[in-house]
Image (tube, rainbow, N blue to C red; front, side):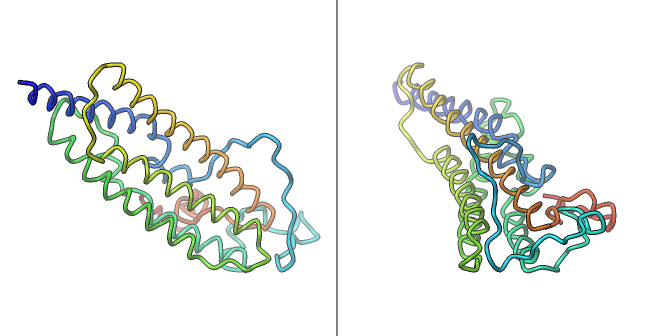
Length: 235
């Protein structure tokens, strides 16, 4: 009888915790494509970016030049080519449309759906780890400090997101009391909230860099590129 109660408690824990993670991360790791994986909040006390040696300066005639993040500079400057490589790595790391559907749907008290969520979460977390490694392996010239810092924080984000999914799918002792269960859920919620805030800070860092070095928005999800080519890569 005790084993049966523990088994039911374990299933309830997995369902509630998984559902919480999906709802908290809905605007994070599982909803990457439409927002270009670029976010809006700015950390307190952030300073201005300064261009190191070796970077392509902005043109003197800003009126006649292509706008910041304009597609006219596609594949041109070394900075643009570097960002295109980084964007391609990140985009390949995001969940597919099918995976996002599985991670965001309700469980409806169905064990099969819980198992499918767990399997997809493990696949996504593994891909996140691979993406973080690929970002850290992306070469950065020694004097490109802002780019190097940005590459590192993007890699850290993928690693942190992977850790949350791994913790959610790792076998653990069932909660013995409702207080213990609530504590476990609160911890996951807090970590996911922090991950979302980090994502917003990364977005502003991305935008400032692209404007400073006149790099276009990510081609994979940029709406202007979609208008020109008629294609939008679904991720």
